[in-house]
Image (tube, rainbow, N blue to C red; front, side, top):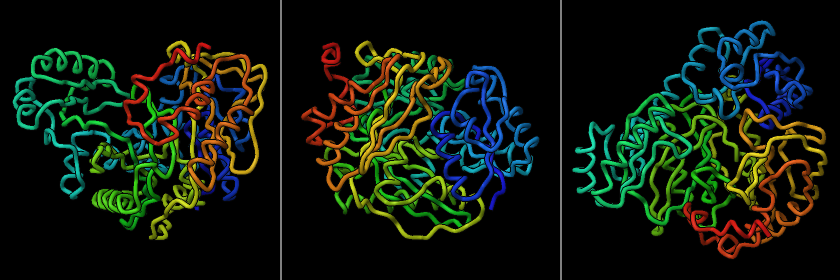
Length: 449
């Protein structure tokens, strides 16, 4: 087992990792930018090293600075959390070259799954269902138009290096293709430095359902059932839950088996997520694989009583997984509390928190790094916490979430709490009858009341 782990991240996920390390008797090193000197992960780690000025590119994304911090503190492993360098193949490689264990996927796995066209080809070879579309990258708009005629409109063109909805365009008819192709490529090149595009049949009335998997160094993988992440705005998740309201036990086992098949095909090591689109007929298609821990991992932990961070660390240290699959014993819902104003287009709201009270009670969990007097810096992701509730049924979980949100007080900034409160009373959400497009037509003006 590792003696000391450096956490190459910030905020709530850094604090989350520190907590598990302490329970395992492992020393921790926090790294921080000058903007995060007062953050709780700095306070609660055994050691802390400043790695640069506030912008992420000069600190949390600066590989030489992080490696230097690991070397000066004699850390023998690095946990990247999520975001920043968690899916950076070069970072994984540099860690290996410096005899520091990267608690995550290998350079090869990150490269293979990070490129969406390659990931799709890999899953096809493994026998995992995929959305009909191009076998690899499209060479031209003309090739795309020809293929779209074969698979039928509507189609979606996507940047192979994409994420967060960038470099994606929905095309409903041939006359729209060339303009959408040009703008998507320009956006992809500007955002990712890679304008490679591929195409998929557009899945109508889709649900976003992902399977949590863990694989070990022996090539074995298990799954921990699904999470439904369909409540999204501009491809950014806002609410997640498990089990999914639309997934039967039969479908759960089929999707879990497909996820394991894909993970074992690449001998995946660590915690990861295989993401699927499920259509209105209950057919599912591989979308992408995230080779890291997910923001929404706590709901899986709550319904399976399984510490995913602990398992990540154990697997990275060479220990085998148990080999069995895990199924939900409760219903759990997570809402992301962001420092944003949902009544005004989710405009960022950094600033000082003047008053803070988090909820408690049975089945209520808060993962957050903020406190009264803490100033939220404007340089990073706006998420300041996650509120997770668990109950025997989905109906009880929704009621509990409403109670917990009403009990939450965050003053001095705007947050997404008013939106989440409305969603807990929303008839479509309460019935489980929604798709990934639901918020596209949702009336956000009700938040101005």
